[in-house]
Image (cartoon, rainbow, N blue to C red; front, side, top):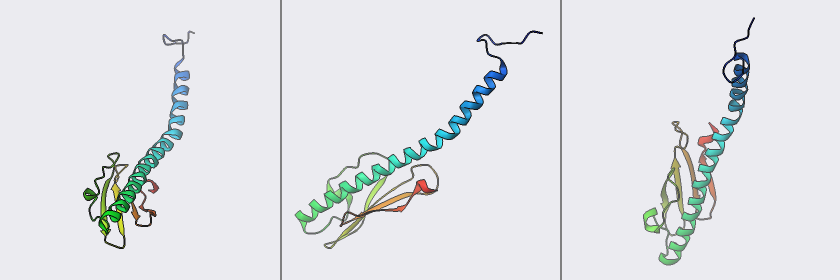
Length: 128
């Protein structure tokens, strides 16, 4: 009895074992890769919020109060995943926030920074 082989010399069972091993490896590595991409996105938000903090500090030194709008800071965000806005501003302090949907689910990723430079993750889109 002859065993049927494909032109490459592998039996069908051998090909099925290879596919199963590759599927198992993908099921292990794909979630890790996706979490890594989300963390990179969150770093983009953090870096931009720190730049807003620096711009707000410089603005206050020149004008005597913090800017109430991101456009007044003459600042351009790096990246496209988040929207940035100043929530609260005055002589004594400010709060700026970034908001974005980084993994296409209904939950938004949100973080903020204040006049002390303290970064706060308000809502973590990666934790869900």
